[in-house]
Length: 333
Ligand code: UT7
Image (tube, rainbow, N blue to C red; front, side, top):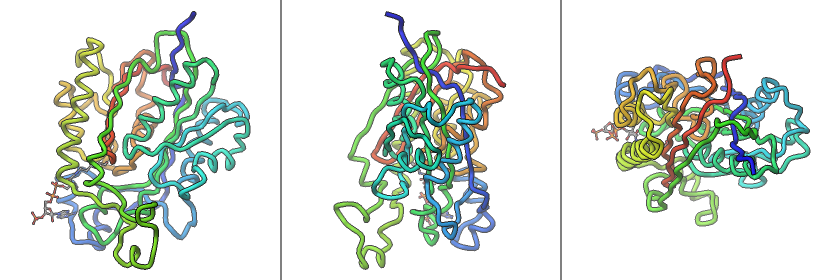
């Protein structure tokens, strides 16, 4: 039997127009451009304004719409759409279902994946299995987030970090030795205490009290999350290099989750990679949670060549973390 791989055949992305820069943010909370640049490395982030009345499905549909156009795919030819998000339009139905409806994707099944900032990694690993089964030919994986809907803009420890945006890839089968080669995916629920949204779920449904106590916003203890992220993201990335006998020369790019420039640099350092081999756009977009990886691929698409070795690595709420080793599937178009 011929061995199938799934390969990325196109990328789409979208960022809402409004930009909140550090200067503007420092008028809202007690912070400064210098503090944010030194500790996090973010200069500005795109936000979907709440008065637009739109959610993650709107951003996701923009990225997927562009993806379908770039890959010449008719909506009716999509077999499966997986949406990674922690900011779904609603608790139910899935944002993936809504994206399909917005785009006329009628012959597919669709569902959401919630794995914090590792959502996109988990989602392409899932899409990969459907493609490799031989039963699904066109699988769309999209990360879409309106993080601004759960950020407390009176909290200076969280508000500089997050941004809104979306990115999507198409996965298709190939018998060539390219595409997704291997994965390491892990989680440890003990980390939930350090990063979560306290209210709005079944443990603490929304009430006047939860709203008055500001419990519907992101709760994060920065330092423990930072420590776990620095070690776990680097551990899995280095393990993947060892598994496949990859030296730093063999790797075209590390595609890291964009949470903090210091975490990105520490991971690259452990892998022995120079900065030029690391995809970085955190300065302009901030942490868009499940959208960071596809937005990196979207930004760097024209610099990627057929066969390039990429290591995708993430860490996020859960805790969840992991890495995927893939060989890029096409030259700049
Ligand atoms: O993607 C999901 C995963 N999330 C992450 O990976 C986030 C990981 N954590 C981090 O990136 C960092 O821990 C933060 C960026 C959240 C915070 O940076 P830090 O270097 O760990 O700062 P800290 O929390 O230790 O705070 C240091 C000081 C404190 O003041 P004192 O107590 O030393 O006087 C904070 O109150 O910085 C203060 N501070 C700020 N000052 C100016 C906290 N936030 C700000 C701010 N502006 N925005």
